[in-house]
Image (tube, rainbow, N blue to C red; front, side, top):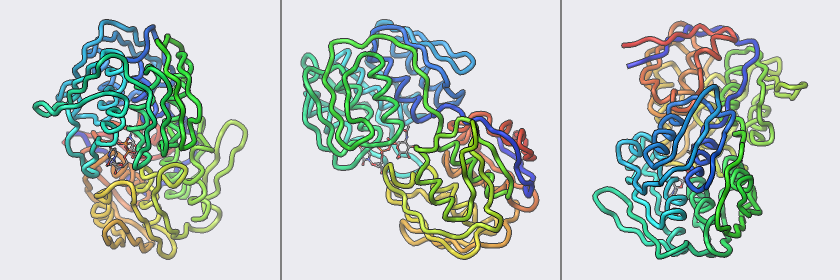
Length: 418
Ligand code: UD1
């Protein structure tokens, strides 16, 4: 198994280009299933989850190519079944339910199963699709959905602003008969990017980015060319890298509006972040960083996908801070590993109390999920001595060329095999 070995304690300095967003690319690539013509996507990050998505599209009947950040998808004869072997490695596969139902009136998608950061059910997706006329059975671990003719527009009130649920419904409703209104919809920038992509293909969607989205169904969607938005979570991780190593990073293609909640917290901690020309500059504000309180919330609140990284930074703060995780249960698996590096963190249910220490000490640590892995890399970059981050296949799901990007700004980081 591969691991990263980091010799910490070196300030990072230089430019990093932010890659295309994984969480925007996954649903937008799967939305090709709803489109009746060839699509070209640019700014697609080269990540394990993207390659899994392309394999899934191939299995479902599309033709795909991927070269230098450009993906092409050509439509073919669609097949309604997303097999367990793929879905178990990538939960986002469940996003093919909406477009397959809309195109084929049938979808068989393996249930994603448990996941390291909580049980993560898809009940809200199914309940909403049922309102549009779909019916579901569970057959041998597969969700089997069917509908009698075209899906019908509906008024859907989500119990929670689920990101995946909103995305599945956008794809289904784009091709449904009549108007669909999604109330308490997710407002995440990746949802907006998907809606914008569907509109570029001819869908009629308004209200994306607000909690009420209206979709007037159309008969068909046609192909287009589309650039995937930059990855706000990758960018946020590198903002933390500048601060935790007491260096200075210049980020190209850094989405400021989409990162507002993260930038506000980092500034409160004493990190200087400003746009200068075509880059965003991040460094400490002269002194150390201070502990702050953070609560994860749906967008525009502080993103759960940045919780682990800001915790790593807070481990080295002056004073204490509190982090409350409200989106996922069991998303504190990095706490034990950070503690092995000398962090002082106390857990009480969904709340972590972080008491800043003067330094972290390198240690062998184990990555448990994508963002937890990023927090361990950040801690390793700042720690004294050598840190080995094991099980980095999690990291490869979401960070393009991470060790090359970090090496390019002065980190001592190498990939090795056990
Ligand atoms: C997406 C992101 C993930 C991010 C999360 C929250 C992708 C590929 N993943 O995940 O990185 O952390 O948004 O910003 O874009 N829930 C239910 N029933 C459902 C659906 C969700 O109970 O049917 C619960 C989940 O268990 C979780 C919460 O709602 O506790 C948020 O889930 P959701 O917003 O759907 O996140 P994902 O789309 O899975």
